Amino acid sequence: MILKSLVLASLLFTTSLTYSSTEDIFRVAPYTLKHTNGHLLLNFQTKADLGLVIEDNGQSKYAFNYKKNEHYKVELSTVPCGSVKEFKILTAETRSVVYKNTQPASPCPSSVSGDEFVFGFISDTQQYTERHADIAKIIAHHNSIEPMQFLINGGDVVQNGDKQEQEWIDYFVGGKSYLMDIPQIAAIGNHDYRGAGSAIIPKYFKQFMRWEGADKFGNLFFDMSEFQLLILNSNFSKLSDMQEFAVWNWVEHKMIDAKKINKPLIVATHFPLFSSSLNRFSTMSVIKLRMILGPLAEKYKIPLVLSGHTHMYERSFKDGVHYVVAGPAGGRANSPSYTNPYMKFFDKDSLTFTKIKLANKVFTLETYNQENRMIDSVVIDLNTKNLAGL
Image (cartoon, rainbow, N blue to C red):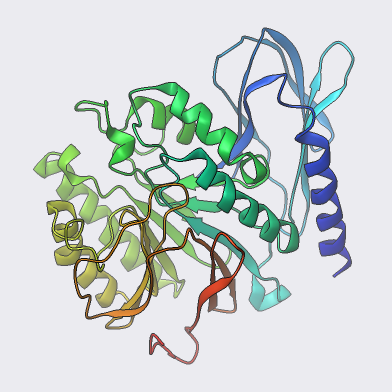
């Protein structure tokens, strides 16, 4: 409890420090990506050529003259579970702190420590910076109360992903109240491909949301203390038949491995399997998800599938699997055009942020709207097989 209080106090101090000192220095304010190797990647762009020093857990590293408008990714060291991670960016000349971030302690296995693993989920931050800013404040508020290990963005990060870099700059401005503090994990949405031609991973998405050596098909896999997370690129039209076969083979083997070690596996993907939106429910990508991912999720007892795309919050349940579709976190709201027989809760008007807590194989999901009102919640207890989907 003392450690959590110290972490919270540090996070609140960090917020007041960084937001007042980064605007004149950074074109893209510092943010982090959660790397599949367990490290964090610190990303930023400066507005001018500037000598900076990155301090990683008290050790000065990466002292360079950073060039304006260049996008930098700096790999930070890991810390043992239970330890707090702190990193700073300082000016080389005066050693003034221009950015500081204190990450919450990485949880040790809850079966031993009782620690709760907390992370978040949003999708479709595209299009309207002011709408993104509205839900961003809610995310930042919840992070100040219960610091998150990371936040999943289900894709359509921006409206025209590969046409204008400025849209990405606007995205970081709209979400600065949480992006500067919470590590990001992103799926690729269909809008993220606009202007990308035949590229499997769009240029700007790769620049801002991936790293060198990341999966060439746009997928990610994380093995964490409490669960495993698979980020699936569901834009199958970008793949050849052979490439798509390889991806599905990879997905099934990850599910097989998770079942062998009795570790929950969550899947996140942009397109939803089940939705009350007919137009966005009948594309070939969605048909393939229903035909292939659905049966695999049921066979290997995947407890939770997270998606976006429809711009309507919806929670469904089918044959032991919970499906959560995020409402927009910046995009426009849509209306239903189809009766989803598996739907358990629906809200077409809300921007949404879902907070997910996990300890001892019990998932607690709480979904909040732009007014910080909890509109939906569900508990998935894998110990008692309480999977009624209510």
